Image 1 (tube, rainbow, N blue to C red):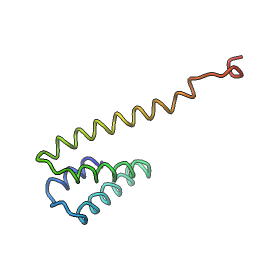
Image 2: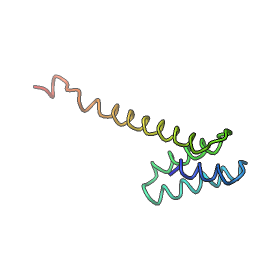
Image 3: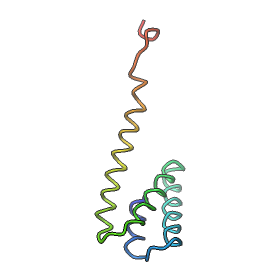
Image 4: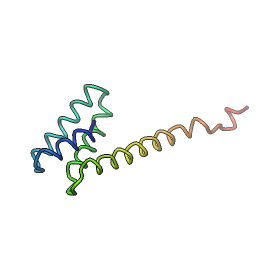
Length: 93
């Protein structure tokens, strides 16, 4: 959600503090309505990062941020499951 809102706002609206705030608010609101508070924070952050991009092709940059965010979430999810895989001596016996 954040990447889509950031790329849309970044493509069609001139970048200034008010439009960046508006894009972040829209991304967080839509995300909160669809998936909850945890996703809204990530959507707002990613939307702001995409809107701050100063290059020519904001959609390519948004796709790169999508890949980076997806890899980060996958790694964090994987690391959070490591303690469940480790068995201590008390649990094993």
